[in-house]
Image (cartoon, rainbow, N blue to C red; front, side, top):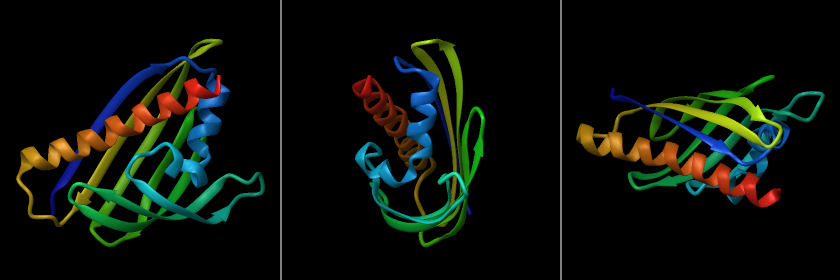
Length: 146
C-alpha cells in the first residue's frame, strides 16, 4: 500500500487568531478547499470545535468519502482518518506561528495511504497539488476576510 507525503509552508497576511479560527472551521472547508465537496460534522466538543467529521472529496484520481478525527492544539489542528473508501489512511496537520500582529506562518503536512495502482510520479504530483491547493485556498480565504 503506497503512502505519499507533502508539506507546504506559506506566510499569510492575516492575524494568528483569524487563521486558527479558519482552519478549525471544518464545516466551511468546501468554501475554500478546492477538493472538498461536503462536510458533515458528526461530533464537537463543549466549545463547538469539531472532533469528528464525514467528508466527500474529489481529486484527479477519483472521488472519495472518509471520516476524520480532529485534535486541536494552541498552534493548529491535526487529524487522522477513522475510515475511508479509496484511502486507507490520512494524517494531516496545520501548524501556525505568528510572524507579527498581521502575518501568520502556516505549515500544512499531509500523508495519505491508499491502494491506487498509480505510478509514483503521478501520486507525488497529486498529493503535492492537494497540499498546495489547501494553503492557496487558506491564503485566499483569510486574506479576503481582512
